[in-house]
Image (cartoon, rainbow, N blue to C red):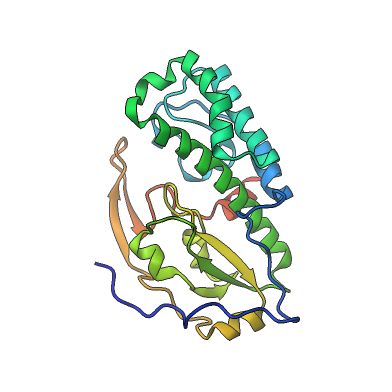
Length: 251
């Protein structure tokens, strides 16, 4: 069981005139340009199982498990790209793409879990694009806003480890962000706030090490049998920073 640890020191302080903050990249308002560019650069890769395209490979290719026809995959990719560009909400996006996928026969694989599958495709792609775009912005602005704060998203229930990371405040260059940056699990809605050193200091927990740091869990790849040791609280296939690995892949 995760250890009981003290998280933060109460509600976040209010920023002063000298405490600039980056807006929530997952909140309402214009979609960050970097998120649009990230998704727009993706190609296509067919895969039957979700493990066929793994971790950093998602930075270069769009995929959706069990969609084996490239034209259908391309249509789905285009619908997600438009949703990211226009800030289209889930219900509106689903209504538009459902008829296309029904004709493909893809929906026959999912039965009663179809709504969950739609939401997973939408949430994963839109949030990863925004997260990757945010990291590019962090790299550009970290001299002014050198600290990152781990924040819980608007979910009704949260993963126990994610709750324990709520309020963690570390420098942007801290290695912890290499495999804990959001999203770090399927349908993870946590987000990262980029703040000034002055704002971070007001929180009272600046540079405190996160709960579970250095602890790992054994995971076996279901297809290859390869063993991987994952940071506790991070889902299989999510133990990487989508922004860092995307930037490396473009070099």
